[in-house]
Length: 213
Figure (cartoon, helix red, strand yellow):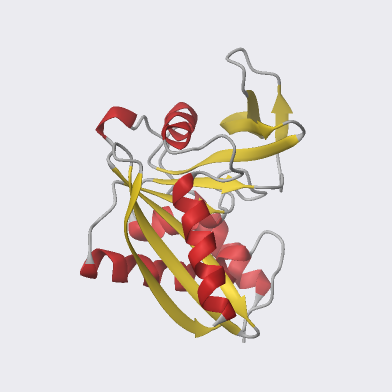
């Protein structure tokens, strides 16, 4: 049976393994996007591979499975990460290994500095970035480069991007990136008339298609 207390303890342990380091966006070519769609208690984990230079979808993988853990704020990874990780493994086996992974959810912008993007990044030891529609945890400080900064406990963890007037998205470090790297990589694959960067937008679109049957 799922234990929130044990899940929180695991998050605290895993958060100590998060690495924040510069990742050269110029050397990034293949960006993966991860998302999950639902049909009742069935989940459809989707991983897409997206070419940054060609700005096009390369391939995608879908893994279906039962989802028994309810949505609990701050514990999303325990509900969705297994299907996301499984779909990413399938993507690597069938198609290509990405240079960085974008996850629909938070990274370090989390009460225990271990949102789903950090959880997956640490679990697989892969560079990861969290992209979220709503602020779960943290403080916003006006930035000097046109993007407001996102802080957690005085640690700069990401940026806030206004994609449309009044519509803000929250970018945060997952694992093996720093805030500036996360911002630059995200912007490089973002059509600014869309709410999400292309890798996640495509993963979301595909997951919903499979969920509809």
